[in-house]
Image (cartoon, rainbow, N blue to C red):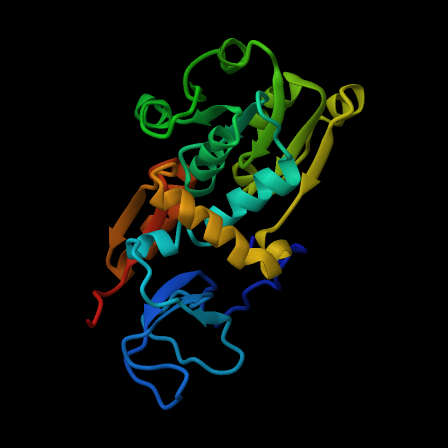
Amino acid sequence: IWVTEQESYLPPVQIGEVMRGGGLAQIVDSQRPDYAVGDLITGLTGWQEYLLIDDAAMVQPVAKGLSVPLPALMGVLGFTGLTAYFGLLDVGRPQPGETVVISAAAGATGSVAGQIARIKGCRAVGIAGGADKCAWLTDELGFAAAVDYKAPDLAGRLRAACPNGIDVNFENVGGEIMDTVMEQMNLNGRVALCGLISGYNSAEPMRGRFDVVLMKRLRVQGFIVLDFLPRFAEGAAQLAQWLREGKLVHRDTIVEGFEQAPRALNLLFDGGNMGKLLVKCADSIS
């Protein structure tokens, strides 16, 4: 979305500009008292090996003394974890005992959203591509069931996994998968519309089942994690507590070498990653 001219939540990246991207970086040289060599920063660092921090840079220091692996600051405690937290709880509003379906459930956001649903007493059902991903969801993350969208009869297998219908849909994919989920939603269900990745590379407009929205009185709400920027500290604190308590499990797919960034990006579209997808550019200086 960032490299098209369509209206979005951030202006498109212009030709010749550094490609926008989130990152975790370490200060290697500083002439400012608020940034010491060795400090960590996170934010929109861009696709580059070195960043010159000025007043316009959208970065912030990482709190010192965090006893978590560094990749967690980009995933479960970063933008994707916060997207899952606020999207599910504030937009989806699940209640104990309800069935929550998450598409792209083995991805960085979906895997956290499903675990939060479980923590909140819901029945989490994930949709993912392949037996290995589905087994990870149920065996390690505590999903009640997982459905492989690459296998035949998605609708039938989803119905079997959700015998009482679907109350909340945390939607990351769009297209046929979203339509299939919405057809099985209960009256007054909620759809937290997080992403539509199946259509991002298509020239066709992305459409949904408004007939189902009408007949089942569904509440469909799109959201962007930046909507909740003033509450990021609240969300990160709760996610960190669940992580320390062992209630949240996170996994990373780390591709070594900045030159591999284009190959890594394509893993998002062919389902080649599990959990948070990261490119490691350099080792820590400390």
